[in-house]
Length: 335
Image (cartoon, rainbow, N blue to C red; front, side):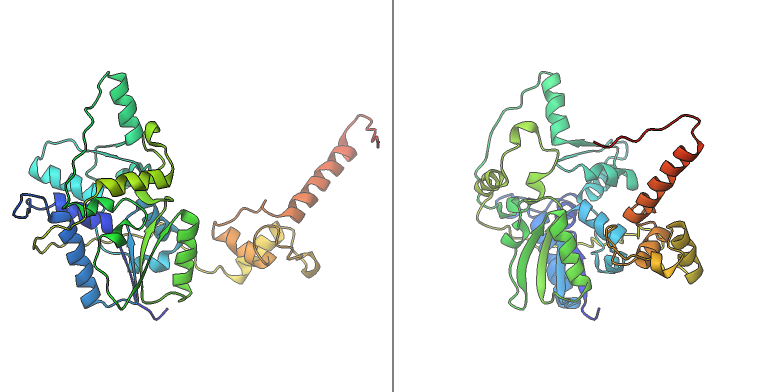
């Protein structure tokens, strides 16, 4: 692939900028770290790298998807710490004895906390809500109407695109849902996308539709979006700073190099494909040929039992063994 692709963890930049440095505010005392830090890094990449494709991935699940199943695209992931890791690191730097607990709508953050140091515990909004209810604590409900809070739209589908300045050299779209993300990554691998800024999230409707939101907020994605849109302001903050937020992400999948011909033939024999006429290439396993299925088995992508002719022959052999070896009489009745 000749095009240059850069994947950016937008929420990581926002949280790192907001929590990882001394507070920055505008003349009215409003915090300006996050939105400016994100745009500062984004524009820096656009100016220095000038990538054909720019993807803002604000989702640990999307990062895992790339790390495990698209290792060839890891080099395009932005070197940015996740919001959770950056925030907890900042807290522990300021308060060494502090215990950090991340609370959010995303269950994959539990996995991320296990992968990296710095996070002592992870709670979902649903767990927090249940905990407060069991403790008999009722939080006072209040909503502010701050107009300089355009960045509040970020956790919605297309929220990043709605709160950023556009570059006329790029087209813009957002992709949500794992299936759509996979299709987009495949298009990138096949060089079918260029001059495009893509916002990507594993959850349909983005973070506000996370799988572990509190029960009383399980409305439709449209209802949640309208609530966030009404809560967010119309204007951005104004500030200036220079923050380094880069980080690398490792490959999380095993070696998938092509196996030797001997390995392929041995696996084919285990599948019962030891002669050319036995290679039916029926496609019921999901692979176009028996040979490709054998390669997938060696690479750990498939199981040998995922073959209808193999299972059918195994079942017939098992039935024959029962009939030939049982000491009892067997009657076969046909209705």
